[in-house]
Length: 217
Image (cartoon, rainbow, N blue to C red; front, side, top):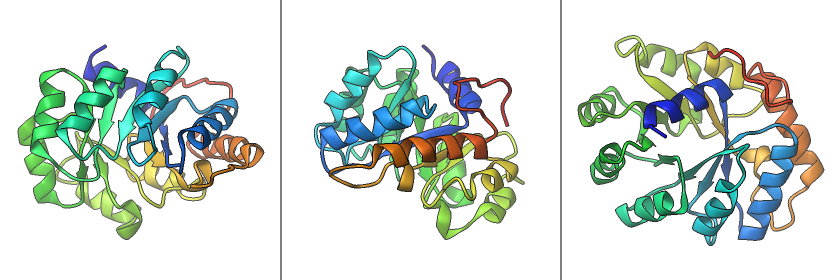
């Protein structure tokens, strides 16, 4: 599937679960709980031990769109794509990773914070960006940034929660990346709490918890 098609799926879902966990088993438990609450786009970060195996297992589930996060090296990008990841997310703008993904028509969301970084990313042909760390600037900053770049698809990540997700979408975000209580860094995650948080998050972005995703922000 093309990078554009993947971006369309993310835009329809509006919410990406950003998975951070101290073990692969804890990541699996958190993902399963969030999936039971309706989450259908999952970003497995490379801070999770054996992240590639978790990605590979998730890819087998036709009901979930799987990507890799905290992609810091070209080797990680290659590993993620080989495992079946449909999108790559980085905390910063690494041109070698971006070129690698663009050449393979895999969606890549490099991290940006400034207008200069947006312009560099545009020149590389990216379709979407990650605003990071989002909680350091707030929705008003995103709204201002999109003034000169109204056509860009931007996903804030870092400090996004059910409490402020709607504000980010109203400011022009195409979707939001959410970790925190949706993916607590716990060896024994509270799966009932995660499922409940998933339902709250979906309600916050304007979607019910039945996998329905009609329309997009």
